[in-house]
Structure formats: structure tokens, C-alpha cells
Amino acid sequence: MSQTRPLKIVLLSYHNHNGGAAIACGRLHDALEKAGHQVTTLVQEKTGEDSSISLAVSAVKKWMAFLRFVAERLYFARFERNKSIRFLFNPGIFGQDISQHPAIQEADIIHLHWVNFGFLSIRSIEKLLQLNKPVFWTLHDMWAFTGGCHHSGDCKGFEQTCGHCKFLAKPEPQDLSHQLWAKKMKQFHYHNLQIITCSDWLGNRAKSSSILNGTPIKTIANPIDVAIFQQGDATQAKISLGLNPDKQYLLFVAMRVSAPEKGFSYLKTALHQWAIEHPLLVQQTELLVVGEISDPEIMQSLALNIHTLGKVQDVSTMIKAYQSSAMFITPSLEENLPNTIMEAMACGTPCLGFEVGGIPEMIDHEVNGYVAQKLQAADLCRGISYILPQSEKLGQEARKKVATHYESSIIANKHLQFYQTSL
Image 1 (cartoon, rainbow, N blue to C red):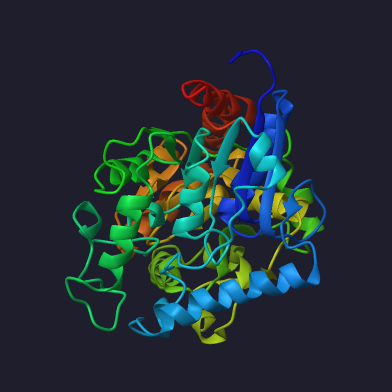
Image 2: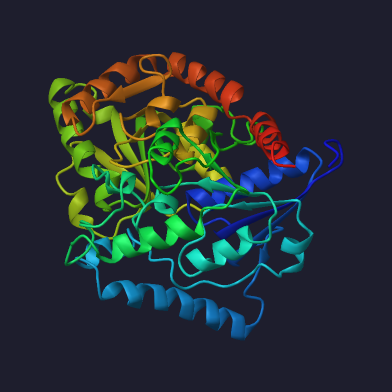
């Protein structure tokens, strides 16, 4: 096949923009399109206006999509340890067969992203592989090579046959995780499957898995448009958001602030210690929070005053939040390659995060931010003290890192080069 003609590329994503994986998919769509290729994004759920195509185009299909989502949850409810882990594990039993969709049939490249919640099942992914077209799959978590969990934590069962799963009420050798592992082991073993991971951390985990052993795996980061996410005047950004231009802000972002994996409790402890060590700075420093606060108690007894923006869907508002902040703090306990860190760095905002997942690949310790030891609130506190006096200098380095590593055209070319290996 000619390497010069435009490719017909189909991207598959559960949603068109809700969640980090969906955002990354949309940005890749734009980057590949700008590179001159014909790109179609198929989604199960769509909100807003963009070029993605919803497969639930009628009332009946919307109802069927909802039933598949519910069926996945009800199926797992019989096995789950408790409700707190309900969305941390997906069986992949229910999904739709889209192998005969016209865009799929015409595609040169089929590229999966996050496809759970009843969009694609293990079987419907296999149906795509059976078309014998090049199938690429960008992993945004571990689901493709585990018995059902999205992040396994310290568990390395995925390197063997799963089983004894900590997410299940009755862990045993032949439990649901092992059964799903066996399905994937059989149904994902096709020569035309190629894996992309956004971070080396996830790539190394995928390579060590029994399911993807021998499958081509390449690390390619998510793209970002540095012409959209830019540095700006901090004072003007603060005024536009109704913030005090004379104060410095520490930014925390989470879809659900109280979600345990987002690590807000560690930030709370770190801020308490920082306030003790820097009493003169407390009155001129505030915590800026973006996200849903469903549990107000988590915000009680904070060492700093707090300003909340709630859920932010508008990109320009989010950019102003980054530009307003002296640093972006992400104390997450599980991460792959967070879009928020990339966005903040592109806006010239240095970042502070734990040494988890792909975060150390993004933040260069004491060069463009600070990487704290995992679960060490005291080191998180040291990071705040390190960044604040030199926020502007570190922010300039952060912007350089994004421009040279994650800029859209760079990432698009890396994808295209990988695509060509299978054409």
C-alpha cells in the first residue's frame, strides 16, 4: 500500500469528550486530520458538537446502549467485593458488533481507545480483529491485559492467569477474573493487533502481561495543541475567574474530588504542614479546586482558604485556571499519563505529583516541577516549598518540555510511522 496517500483511519471511543481517554482520542483525531488523513471517530455516547459520530443515533439504539451499560453493571454486581469498586472492574461481556459498519469496512486503520461500559465486549473486539485489518489499541489503563480491573495496584496476577482477585467478594483460583483472563488470552491473540501505551510505565506492565506477551507494543504519548494551551498573563486570568489578583493559587483538579484514588487526603496533610512551616504565606495563598465536591466534609479544616470553580467543561476557562496558578498539584495514587499535567505544563504552570504511573515521565524532578515519593505527604509539602519561590522559572521549563515532547504534529507523526509498519 502506498505510504503517501491519505489513510482512512477510524478511532473508537466510548465517549467523545468525557474523561481523559476521550479527550486524548479527540486530540489525536484533530492531529491526524491536520496531517492530511481521513479520520472518523465512532462513539457510543456523544454530547456537544464535534465531528464524532454516535452509534446511538435513534431512540432504540440509545436504549440498547443504556441496556448494555446496565447489563455490564448487573453482571458484575453478583461478584463485586462491595459498591466502592463497582466501576474499577469491567467484565466486557456486553457490547455491540460494529465490524460491518461502513466506516470500519472502508478503514485502512482501526484504532481503539477506551471502549468499556457496554460499548465493545471482548467478543466484539475479536470481531474487529477477525476483519484482518490493522488494529491498533491505545491503552489508557490496564483493562486489555487483566481479568477485568482497570488498575491492579500492587497485584501482578496479570503476569500469570489472574484469579484470587481483590475486587471480588470470593477470590479463588478459578474466579471471574481468571475466566475473563482466559477469554482475553484466546480472543485477543491475533497477528494484526498492535498496542500503544501512553507511558513507558504502562508499556512495561503490558509487556510483562501474559495476555499481550509477543504483541507489538509501542509507547506514544497523548498529543496536545500548544497553540490552544498557552502561557498567559496570570493577573488577567485571575481577574477573569473572579480570583484575587494579589493572591497565589495552588490548583487541584479531579472529576470527583473525594475519589480515594485522587489522593486529596495527602494534599490536605501536606498543606497543613506547609502552613505551619510558612505562616506568613498562608494569608496570601489559596487552594483553587476544579471538580465535583460531593463530600463537603473532605474540605473541612483545610489549612488554606479554598476557591472552587466546580465542574469546568469549557477549555478556555480551564486554561485560565492553569494560568492563574503558581502550580498544579496532582496527588493521585494511580495514573497513566494525565492530560491535566500536560495541559498545565503547556500553560507554563509547574506541576507537583507523586512518583506513580507515568507522572515521573512527564515531570522532570526539580527541573520543571517536583516528583514526590509515593504516599509521602511530607515530600508533597517539600514540593510546594520548592516550587513556589521559582514558579515562573520552572513553568518556562515545563512549557519547553511539552512543546518538544507532546506537541500534536510530533505525536501524529509517531502514530503514522507505527501505522505504516502494518500496511
